[in-house]
Image 1 (cartoon, one colour):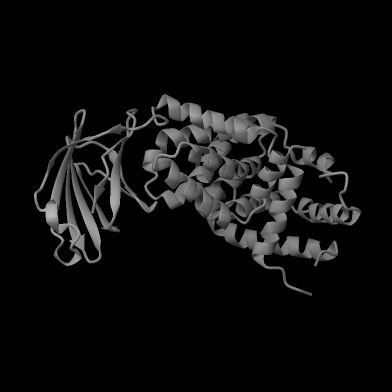
Image 2 (spheres, chains in turn orange, blue; image 1 turned 60 degrees about the horizontal axis):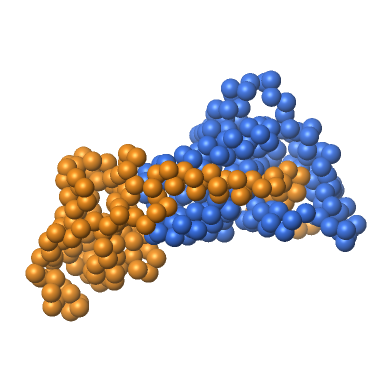
Length: 159
Length: 201
């Protein structure tokens, strides 16, 4: 007698319930409509608003492609009342982003990497956040306020 | 029967690992600005939520309400999910909490769906359904259905969730925390015996 593994037994349970109590017709479509309506209400379906680049440090020019001599640089973006300062520093083969949000407020910051990687950090009470270990390449930062405001994004920049 | 229904069942019948990876991927793509990825996430996870919520003995209408609340909560609070790989667990936990709350509110007045399930079986997928296969499915179902109710509910949640946390499961199913693991083991052992008796092992 073959011993049925835990996974095989759970697979039996799944197949039995998928058959005996199937997902109702149209449920998926109704939930898709629900999710989309909610996203529309929160302004998350439209093209997200872009932060404006105000300043960038001069070290960025000329040194960014030289992996061995990559230097620290800073970027400053603004959107509405939100001021975002970024410090990008080399960290081995990768980079580290330290950020400050002024004035401080609860915001989730996500790094959207060109290669599909998504990394995230939460802005602290003092407005700081850090995202270590970011692969080199083109990135955008997406800022998601924890109130009802729609998320907004920085323009793409290279790290 | 529409092909979309078959697809939904196919998703629900998948091992949770694949479902979890696909939901994380869809969440990543949605955050990165692909609106259609939200459809993908809902398509992958709604069948899982259905089975988890139905384990709380809610009728179809209440179960749909719970799943709808879960998706609304997800869209509104997605910024609080820092680890996008955890989106599947966030969704199932949110759905379980809401299902438990609703089931408690509905009290014992809500008829259990246990009796309702039986007449549905065995379902004919198509005119060509093999009698042998139909017989096998009937015996598999008989093995699961013959388990004590507590086992059926626990195994249904465990089967469709990736790693349900035992603490909340324990309070929701009215069991001591420490007993969830052993109970799951006993329930699986009972199912194994039932399958052997049904000639499926």
